[in-house]
Amino acid sequence: MTPELVFALFALLVVAAYAVQTAIGFGSTLICVTFGAQLIGLQEVIHLVVPISFLQTGYVVIRHRDGIDRRLLLGRVLPLMGVGMAFAFFLLTRVGGPWLGLAFGWMVLALSARDLHRLRMGSTAIDRPITRPASVAALLGAGVVHGIYASGGPLLVYAVGREGLTKKAFRSTLCAVWIVLNAVLVARFVVAGDYDRAVIIDVLWLIPTVPIGILAGEWIHHRVDERRFRFAVLVLLTAAAISLIVRYSAQLA
Image 1 (cartoon, rainbow, N blue to C red):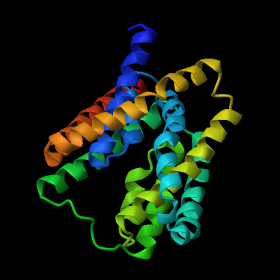
Image 2 (spheres, rainbow, N blue to C red):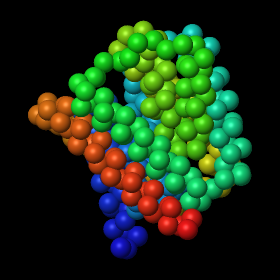
Image 3 (cartoon, rainbow, N blue to C red):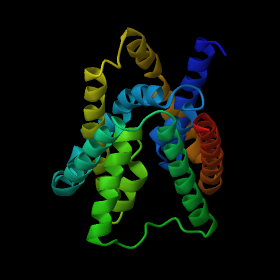
């Protein structure tokens, strides 16, 4: 495929990812990275999707800033995830290439399989509270995963989703987390020289895909059965994860 066609397909993927997130609350970045790695390099995908995430998270934080649980955000989430991200940055200097792609594939496969099982069992509610050590471990792990793949959402939701927050506080607090941590990621990319003129132009071209995806997601949300749609997304994620595992395993052989 030509570079232009690859980018067009990736742009459609971003539209689909934000449509899914708007329709069912699923992580748009996780979808972009999982499927985008089939088209371009894993790190290249992350460089593109992290900046455009500010469009949605920034909107929520600005409009619903009164819902942010600052005590939880500043007292536990950011410090623990910050430590996890620092370890991730150190890890990136030691491990790279196919190993990162392979590990990401296995992570997505495990998360998708877990959610598929819960969906089949009819469980959609948030689980009972977890212990403090388990919460600390989840937040540290979320920081590590976000530092490497910009996809720490599942582990963060696992920990924060059991803090008894209201729906508004939960969404606002999580968006505030992504604003801060993604700003750190972008700063790291800039310092490393990852944003040359070509990448910046690609990011600018991708900006319109976010509102288009949000509008499409609203349409889906009101017309498609959420449980069936979520099941289909998880099946696709599972298939994509298996494809990533096969692809990067072959590179290591």
